Amino acid sequence: MTVIVWIGFIVSLFCLLYIGRKNIWLGLMLAAFVLGVFNLPIMEILDEIINTLSDLSVIFLALAVGTIPIIGGLLEFGGLMDDLVENLRMQKKLFLGFAPALIGMLPMPGGALLSAPIVKRASEGVRDQTKVAINVWFRHVLILIYPLGALLVSTKMAGLNLYLEILYILPGCFLMVILGYIFILREVKGEIEYTTERNYKKLIKPLLVLFVAPAIHFIFMSLYKDIIPEIPLLIGVVVSFILALFFTKPGWQNFKRVFVRMKPWNFFLIIIGMFLYLNLFNRSGSSEVVASVAFSKSFLVVIIGAFFGFITGRVAVPVALMLPIYYSKYGNDTMNYLTFAIMFTSIFMGYMISPIHPCVSVSIEYFKSELKYFLKKLLIPTAIELAVMLILGIILI
Image 1 (cartoon, rainbow, N blue to C red):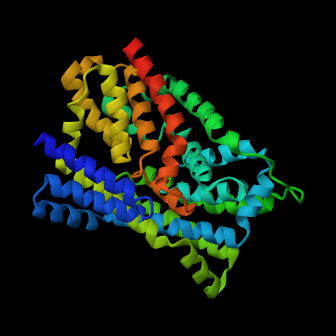
Image 2: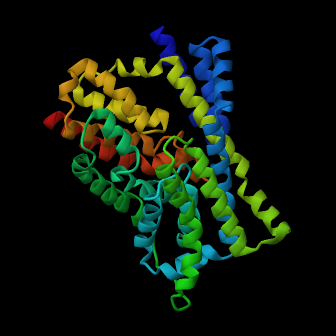
Image 3: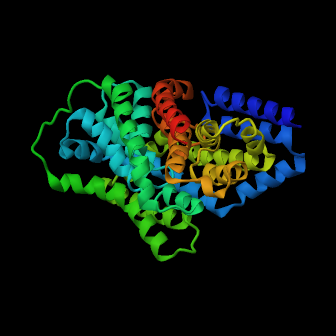
């Protein structure tokens, strides 16, 4: 049975990587189907498909993510992205690192589509795969230590103090910034050319459109804790969309051109495919089989942790998978702040480059690049970060 699970997993991964070179959502859906065929009866596969397509949180999320690129397209059409770059006034490399990180501090699913137009506008002459790498890597450098993100839920599951844990994860965040500069931003040449004096009014409009959606999402989530999280997200995105229409006034013909050019249906289907794969992966029992190969504590928390992050495209979900495995092997009282920091950072690095991670998939789609080029670009900095985590794990835990 274990051999069949491994074969199914490897074949599904091949489908994802091979087909995903040209079509991310189709690769996700076929990979999910292959994973199901090898491990589940056909009725259970159909049941999981129905559950995914009838899950309101998934549908609302897909609708929100499908709307975000239209907002970006409207901002580009109306010149508001030019206004943002023109009036933020930073050195080019600093801007390309800071702007995605700034927007990333207001996390929302598919939010990389908000920073992508900014990266595109400020990275003239930069290769598409580098633009994807900039958008994904630097959007997440601060999310690693963001107290209201996945770290909030993860530390609660582990019974650790959130803010004390941040201090242990902070060195990994600094290392990410350094590696991002060396392996990604170093390729960026030249300066952003400014042709006018700074105009704060022109700066406010695009910032308002970009930040109103995550702000509404955060406020509603804080006020209505029992609401489906994707409902306030969709409300926020719709408000941002209305503001973009109001500020740009494209007219019907121009709006149609923006809609067709941005291909929002691709982003909608990416989210559906992503959750279908994740649901079938969890139902197939693949996680337990993969975890069984761990032969040391450091290997478990770093290598298996990063692998779970990669294969699920999530952070909190792998933490939920890893904690019971870790406790069963080493006991409940052995998870300290340092061990958790190494595990969380390793999971995060696997999640960073996962094709199931929405920011990766939508960034590749937005910049018209390919998954293989993205993985090639980020393989070395990711491997270095994980190698440091593994060495620390071997020495300290």
